[in-house]
Image (cartoon, rainbow, N blue to C red; front, side, top):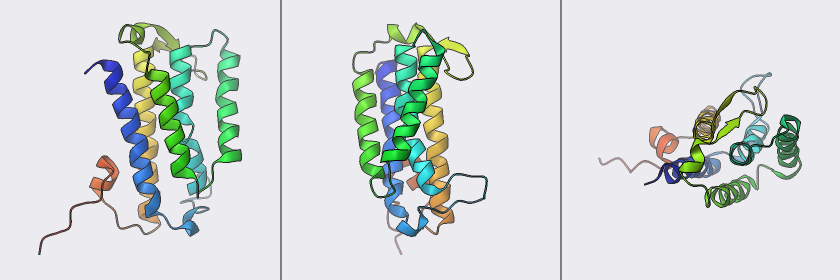
Length: 172
């Protein structure tokens, strides 16, 4: 398996696990948040529907103008708040997965060695490091979604969180 294929597999796994967690929430959980200074469930869901594709696009295309990079990110954020709802979260994640797959389709392992940068910090690193960081972002926010579901009363555990599956029934 190539490095590019491995990155794609991991990015898609994190988003697919988010789709698995989604039906564990009741609709009443949409506006819930664990503390006043944190995102609501739907705000977290909105973030998850663009952070992956926005950062993949950033690291693959690496705009020469940092302002253009930040504006593209902000446009994605605005799009998510205007279009993503609690009810359509899974469908929007599916769109994000398709966009990521399409963006990575022509990326070679050699392309992973090219230079890129983070649009806000300005940190410079390889495309590989940027895409790996995106996997870490998705892992962290997927885990946050899992914790929100648990705090909202979902009966879920480790297998739901890490593998995106319901656990096998316990044998008596």
